[in-house]
Image 1 (cartoon, helix red, strand yellow):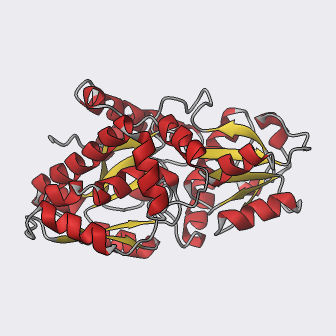
Image 2 (cartoon, rainbow, N blue to C red):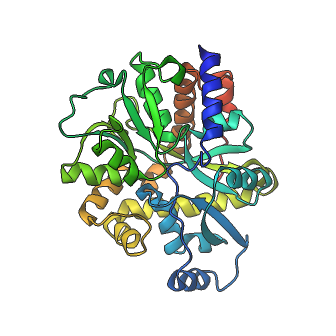
Image 3 (cartoon, rainbow, N blue to C red):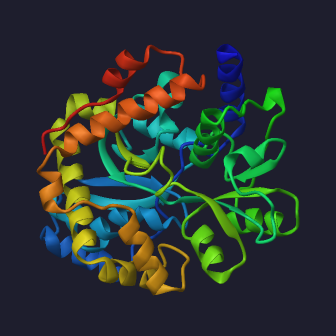
Length: 351
């Protein structure tokens, strides 16, 4: 069964053209104001030069990247950052050759690392940000009710798919498509996924914030799973930071500088959630028209304070890597020895 699931996942990852894009940033071209502010922050000089940071449209939980860019933290640490979008192959090539030094992503990366992506986990970014929704009149209430149902996800092999797989398997329901206990259907756009739910094409929609939360507040759906509050996932990172092995080996100071920029942004968001939301909405980084809801969500992602960063933060990151390696191993999504694999894929960086 374990080997069968590994084969199924490998096929799914091949079919998922834009795998590894979960929880990423929105595509953006630098505004004149941001470019001016960033250049001024370094007096027009960048120690590490120009770099690309890839992402995905509309994810509210990409806040640390948006804030690090807009507040000039990347520039302060010596980077002229371009915010871009990149598909699976572009990310893989960029990470392997070092032209993309860092990406943010979830534990969906772990099977990809096992299959040869040359990156390591170097930090934790945030918690939460995925919800599973059903129609308001649905009789689906718990994970046990999902047997025989159709579940919409953004991509096969992506984070909502793997979160759902862990949730199902821990309840004794096979997530392997060959077993036929559940069916996963991919939708490249969250709005299309929501429409499929409303039209009865799927029974459950696994949605990234802010879409799931927006529809929940409007009464269009009821939420049966929240990554930020579910007992198995609560208090654990949804999103990690992954650094290129090539950059880690050749220029570890560059990775440390990037992590300092991310951490400054996390701490600023912790102290200024309303101001962070204002920037995100005004700069069109995420599609949400309800500032109050956006602030509530940003607060729920557990961005750390400076005190948290200075107190056992790296230990927490390392422990969460082990936690999700064990979880994915138990459901057959990883073949390596869990203890050794967890040690191999995490690297503590002295920031």
